[in-house]
Length: 121
Image 1 (cartoon, one colour):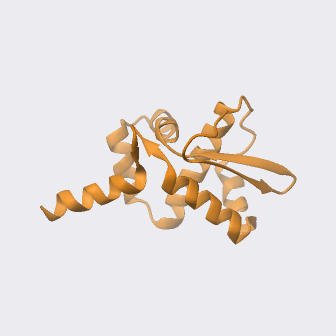
Image 2 (tube, rainbow, N blue to C red):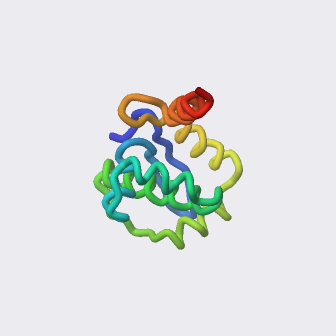
């Protein structure tokens, strides 16, 4: 399971960790922070790059656990540590999964481009 768009796995320490970006990731942020999806998008845009990365990696890993029937056995602090330890090629794999992920059938990367076009109009 979980091998759809926006999914990757990387070795972190002695464990393989999954990351699943997309609607489920956004929903988990929404539930935990008591926001609707539009607010989540604005919230993420308002974070600096590092905090945005930590938040998105945390919830993508949490979503992957849910999809794969695994217990969430990590915290945001653990994700901060992972980011420091993950080799560059694995970070690239995670970024690629993010860029290939979809929310309501649209790639997240395309959604950003649509917003830029709307603002330019």
